[in-house]
Amino acid sequence: MGIENVKTSLPSLFDKCQDYTYADDVKKAGIYPYFRPIEESEGPVVRMEGREIIMAGSNNYLGLTAHPKVKEAALAALKKYGSSCSGSRYLTGTIPLHEELETKLAAFVGKDAALLFSTGYQTSQGAIQPLVKRSDYIFSDRDNHASIVAGNLMARGGVGCDVIRYKHCDMEDLEKRLKKLPLEAGKLLVTDGVFSTFGNVAKLDEISRLAKKYNAQTLVDDAHAFGVIGEGGRGTASKFGVNDDIDMVMCTFSKTLASLGGFVAGDERVINYLKHHSPALIFSASPTPPSVAAALAALDILIAEPERVGQLRKNADYVRRGLVDAGFNVIHGEDGETAIVPVLIGDNKKAFGLWKGLFDAGIFVNVFIPPATPPNKSMMRNSFMATHNEEHLEKVVHTYTTIGKKLGII
Image (cartoon, rainbow, N blue to C red; front, top):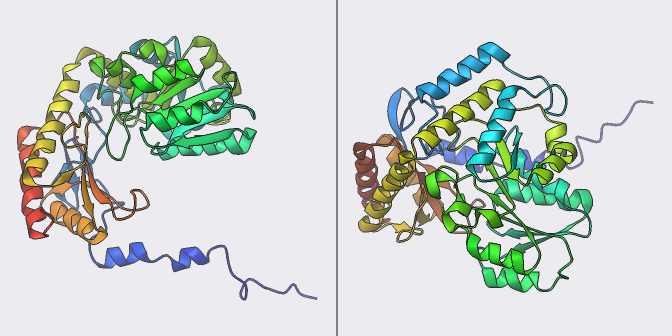
């Protein structure tokens, strides 16, 4: 007797894939802004579709991905060690470059030790899950990055701890939730240092105060703060002068450090524990030699040339002020201090139309629409580099203004 094929008559797991046509509709309209190949990149200017485009949507904050020293370091590591370590850090995947970068990163952020991971996304999972057990609690800002959310979910699913999400940057709400728990309960406060969508900075001084008051440990993700704020780009804890009070700092290499990977830094005993208990580290291939060498070179440049951090702030402020003056709704337009300049549009169609007008005029920015933003809050997420020159920035402001008026946005 043959086996009956019921797949043709019953609902399928893949039905949602067949039903999803929104992206196809946007493509047909000629305003699809995603997955656009970059053919060449020199940092602030890239080549797309055979023409030069000002890049105003990259996280290459200090403009180091095309720096000669970064490229030379990656090539030298490739020649010496090959393209991969072919194993996890735990076994055959450690080379001297890993240890050198860990030592330098720990010293830069003022911690005892650091540990590298293969991606920034993976770092959250590798740092959060091993540190909590069933009776512990994770407190997480509602606007934390998806990588932190994934780390929290893995911890909750893996060990059964409670994850408590507090209102965005609302210290009263955080304290209200903290005070409900026994002081002796294990608590981990996790927050972005700079929030990746709207570019605002966590109230790390207040978070530090509450952590002391309620016996909690702190973990700050400085993905968009490292190389951007704080003394010489040392991040959020440096900005608020609470470096000694924050237990752990984690960060990706894919922004300021012009590479791929991530790290967490903290007390030597904590890092040692993670080295021997983090599945994300033990069961993943280690960061590749060229990636580690590139990050090392970028860190050396940041240390040697801290003026890049000031230039980055100056460039972002130039556009922030220009767009506010033009009449755009720039989120945190009056008090912004990071490389991220978010412009609220509201309507998806207008946001896509603005993106298309900017792209046709030679400027690439990012479009964020729900669910990446709250409902009816589609926005343009601009981000700038230390290597943009005044001509680039003037063109961005002028083009935004021209197209914004044409579309009735301003």
